[in-house]
Image 1 (tube, rainbow, N blue to C red):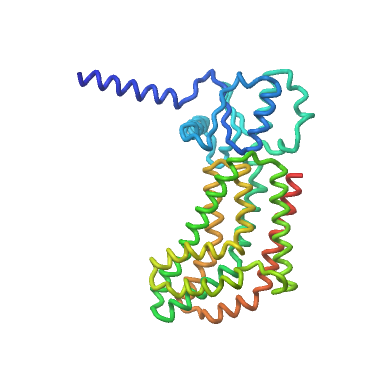
Image 2 (cartoon, rainbow, N blue to C red):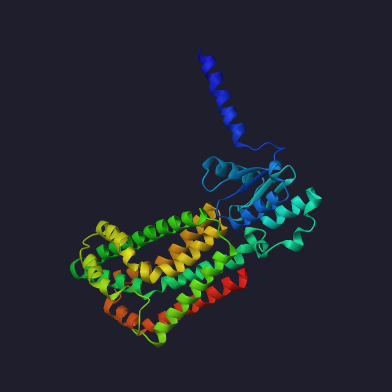
Length: 355
C-alpha cells in the first residue's frame, strides 16, 4: 500500500513540475498588468486577430506564472538584471521587449509588415539593458536629492543631541543606526506599496510625461527656496509639525525605541522627501519587474540613509553635533539649490525621453 502512495506522490510532483515548465511547442507571452510595453504587444495581437496563437501569462499578480517566468529565464541564461517584460517564449528562443517581440511576429505573419511605420513612441525601448542608461542615473540622482535633504539631517542631529545629553556615545551609535534602519525599512515599504499601485494600472507615455512635469515643478520649488527662502511655502517639514516631531524624538531612550519612533517620524518627513521617491517609484512601476524594482529600491534607500549613517558614526566618535548643525544651517539654501537642480534635470530628461 505504501508503494501506491509513493507512486501517487511521485506522479503529483511530476504533474506539478510539468505544469511549471512551458512546453517546447508553446508560444508564451509573459506580461504584467500596468506595463505599457506589454499593452502595446497585446494591442497589436488583438488588432491582427493573433491572440489565439499565444498563451498569455501575467506575472505581477500570479506567483506561479512569476516562478515559471524565472525558470524560463534560468534555462535561457538570462541575467537577473535583464529579466523584463514583455518576454516571448518560443521554440526558437526568448524575445525580450516589445520591439523584439513584434519583429518576431512580423516575420511569422506578413500582415504586420507595415508595423515599423505605425509604431508609436511607446516602442522606443527594446530591452531592459537599453533602459538602464536612463533609469539608473535618474534613480541615483533622485536618491542623492533625498540624501542631502535638510529635513533628514535636522531630525538626525536633534536625535543625536538628545541621546548624547543622557547616554554614552556607544548607545548613541546604536540608537542612530536603529533610527536610520527604521527610515530605510519604512521608505522601502512605502516604495513597494506605491510600485504595487502603479503596476495595477496601464501606465502610458502620457503618465510618464506627467511624472516628468512633477519632477520639474519640484525642482523649481526647491530652487525657489534658494533665492527666496521662507517666502510662500518651504519644501521642508511644515512648521506646524515641528513641535510634535521634536517631542517624538525626545521620547527616544534606547535603540529599540529609536526604531519604532523612526517609523513614525518617516511620515513627518514625507512632505519634504517624497517628491523624488514618487517620481522614481512611478518610473519603476511603469517599466520594471518586481525583482528589478526591489533591487533598485534597495539601492535608492541605501543611498538615502547613507548620510544618516555617516553622521551617526561621526558624532559617536567625537564630531561636534552643534558644529554639524551650524554647517547644515549655513548650507541650507545651497542644499535646496542642489536638490532643485537635480530634480529639474531629471524632469527634463524624462520629458526628453518620453516625448
